[in-house]
Structure formats: structure tokens, C-alpha cells
Amino acid sequence: SVAQGWLVYRLSGSAFAVGLVAFSGYVPILCCAPAAGVLVDRVSRHRLLIATQTILMLLALAVATLIAARQISVQLLMVFAAGVGLVSAFDVPARQAFIVQMVGPEDLPSAIALNSSIFNAARVIGPAVAGSLLGAVGEAACYFCNAASYVAVLVALLRMRLPAAAHAPRHTAPLASGLRSGVRYVWGEPPLRNLLLLLGIVGGFGLQYQVLMPVFARKVFVTDARGYGLLLAAAGVGSLASALRLASRRYSREEHRRNLLIGLTAFGIGVLGLAASRQLAAALVCQALAGFGMIRYTATTNTLLQLLVDDRYRGRMMGLHTVMFIGTAPAGSLLLGALAERMGAPTAALVSGAVTLAAAVWLGLRLRRLRVPAAARATT
Picture (cartoon, rainbow, N blue to C red):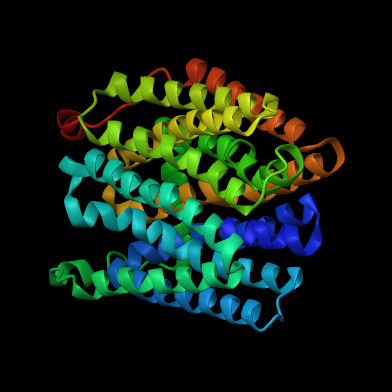
């Protein structure tokens, strides 16, 4: 994603084009993730992950080859972004549901936090490395490294030895009826419904401020690819600190609820601070705060959803989670890209931060009680 945003902006010089390519990747998720959740509840999640990770590796390799051959264009990047989005519509809910299958509900909060820690360790190291690679050897090297990274994931998946029950089909209902029953179940559970609606607002119009980073780097802070990498790495540092803190202990129901509010508030303040920053050093501090809040909110939301859901609907619920977390981003990425094009990146970031703080107010008023089942409550 670091190389993609930089490459699109280099090819087009347009903030709107950066948002448009991001839009192309999110639309398939919005359209396909709910149905993908039905499939996740039906087939072996382990085998599905092997398939999706293989396809993602091949897509990254194809983009790297086109860049190296100087045949890449914004239009082709839109096509490949759509391909990645389509595969991710199946990969993300399968991965999230697979966590419970590996660790069980009693260790789920710690497992989700540790998963966030690993992910954000990569976010700290990745942007800095990618920024250096972008400046030294260009975008193709970043995509080749991305393709190579999938090899380790595939080796780990292939070495797993799971019980036969893990590969057994869970339900055989038709796709349409399975999807309808999943939506009815989630809508009929107010805590699940409220958590997902809030995530849709924040995921669509809050978290998408990251598409503005190439514009901030080049236009606001007048820096190069290394500075761009530092902006993303700073958010990763805050995210990693937050994830490690969440993984270090278990939380009560009230503490989970408090973490949602703390995370949203910290994230919103960080993004508003970024909008007001005119020096790179100040922006890095704000990015770290935004990253801290983002993970505190998103990881806690994921934990609560996984604890609250009936296991029969886990894949379908995670499909809806994917829609709200990732699939709502097309509108946000296009809106913020268009705002940045017309009024500048700081104004667009201001809108993103304001939406997040408004969501925090809604959360405080709406989510008064989360009915965590007794078995899950004992482990949190």
C-alpha cells in the first residue's frame, strides 16, 4: 500500500487518483464480503486461506513485473487493486474466523491483540523499509518484496496440522438463505449491530485519512519517499504500542467499553492534530497518537464481536465486519481524495478527524451495555 499510493501519485500527480485506486480495491469487498462470509462458514478456513494467499502473491508479482517492464499505468493499478479487493473479501473474514479455531474463546482477546501486535510491527518496519526502497531502487522492488512475503505465510499454513473437524463443512444452506439468516441474526443482536454500524462510519470516513499521506508528504511537508515512509511508520509505532498494551492483560466488560471510547477519541485528536501540523516532526507525533487510538478501537471492536457472536454465524458476522471495516472505504477514500484535490489535504484530514470524534460521542450515548456471554465474561 505504501508503494501503491506513492506510485499512483507519481504517475498522475493527482490526489483524486490516489483515492480512485483505493476506491477500486474497496468496491469488491463491499459487494462480495457478505457472501464470502457464508462461504467461510461452509468450507475449510485453512484451505481457503491457502488459496487466497497464493492468489495475492501472484497479483503482487504481476504488478512488480509490469513496473519493472515500465508497462504500468494508473488504469492497470486500478484493475489490480480490484483484484486484490476481490480476494481480500474472502481472505479477511476467513483469517479472522480462523483465529478462534486456532486458540479457542478463552484466549481470544489476547490472540487478537497479539495478531494486532504482529501486524503493526510490520507497519512500523514496512513503511520505513518501503520508503528507503522507493527512494533507492523504486516501486518494483517494493512489490517484489511484497510477493516474497507471502511465501512465509504459505509455508506456515501448509505446516499446520489441524483436526479433521476443522475441514468439515459447517452448514449446507443455500447461499442466499445463509446470507439472509446471518444478516437477520446480526441485526437482531443490538450490541453486534451497534458495533458494526459504528465501525462502518469510522472505517469509511475516519480511517481513510491514510490515503492523504502521499499528498501530505509532497505538498504539505515537502519531503520525499523516506518522509512518506516515516509518516506511515509513526502511525505504526503508535499502533504497535497500543496492541502490546492490549495483549499484556485481560480486560473486564467495562474496560472493553472504555477502550472503545479511549481509542476513538485518541484517534480523532491525532488526525485533527495532523491536519493542523505544518512541520514533519509534529505530524509524526500526531500520527503516533492516531495509530495508538486506531488499534485500541479496532482491536477492541474485533474482540467484542468475536466474543458476542454465536459460532454458527462467525464467518458471516466477520464477512459483515469486513464490509464495515474495509468495504465502506470507497466512499471515504473518494470523498477525502476529492476534498484534498479541491481544498487541500489538511482540510480533508480535518473532516476525517471530526467524523471520528462525532462517532465517539455517538458511542458514548448508544453503547451503554454490551451483553457479553457468561463464558466469555469469565475470560475477559
